[in-house]
Length: 104
Length: 409
Image 1 (cartoon, rainbow over the protein chains, first blue to last red):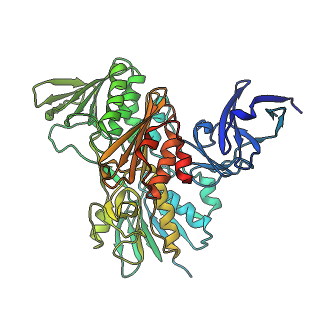
Image 2 (image 1 turned 90 degrees about the vertical axis):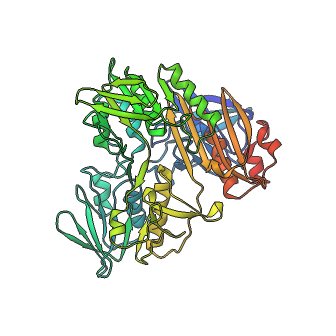
Image 3 (image 1 turned 180 degrees about the vertical axis):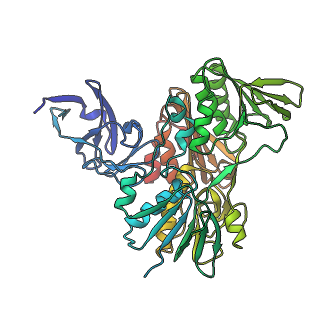
């Protein structure tokens, strides 16, 4: 398995919010849920490659800022038109106030 | 056996409706009729991404495989020519007929034609993928493009043409661009972006004459100025496609007239998307017709639910976006409902205007900025509008007050 990569400090993201993280030529979205858990997905919407980190987090849903495609960021599941392809998710852990993601 | 569901118009609205019928578990026949030779496709890229490509492709809403998997019969390159309401039948241009239990008219809109003699092969409109290919073929360094109409289609095409090196002149009869529905403060940002990219924008001067000799077009303005171009793109609005409905005796009122459930004056015929006018609940039932991608999508899905008997009323807030150069503009709600405006600066030259009604209710929000800088707050504003909220103007104007907090209030 690949190494864990430090994405940000836990305090960098508000609860029920999202942040963009670029690494190794790829872009990811890191989420903090309303119940204070962290999650990570690919950073671009599967519909038109828009950065999801500019979108709105409501409960466990991230909504694309451009065309309102919705995904469950915990599972990556697409939630209706115009998106039909699921988002890839990545394991996340918090260690000493740092958010780490495992980039496969 | 069920006669099934027939959808006339295979654009965003019709395509989404067909898919939604299956997603809702309907297992009778679903037939989608379109007059273009393509799969159902998304139109917004036609003025933008399709122009940026040397070999534009359609962005399909559903692949052949998906349509087959969902048992959606897609008839392409064929028009509906008549509806026999008594027999529940639609007659098609190839001579065949389709029986229906419920019929959805998603016939869309068509570019408003410039009512003037002198137009020829070098004068074009944009609606279809074929139109986009024809325009794209003319966009190259050194070519001169005249854009008639400073609305969204014209301005997006102007930006695309500039990126490909064409010289561009935008001609708008009104005193400024984007007069319809866009506040002057935001239109000014768009105007400046075009001027900075070298676009010549001429406002406040109508067209006196057009001469198209097949090789170039000469546009003469009322003030006497002449613009000669290799291509004239006309973007002066769109009109709903209502001929089929009108012939069938359905009520027409700035589009096919439907109720809040998208039902026409016939209990088995629905209409949705650009082609229909409907009562907008969020503004007390004001009758509107929207030419917008998300509305087409939402109404397609709503029509599908109601064709299956859901009896659900339309409750969405209008939403619209436009991309030009690196700027994105978004509008939630109808700005003409507002009496006063409150500005919120988001940094990086992005800002949002909140439009408040006389009683303080938030009725619309319009914003512009680089990338998707305004998207999140416009989305939150849309939710506030849907709730008919009346947030304190001071809070709306203070970037440090999170809109999400106002939504929770």
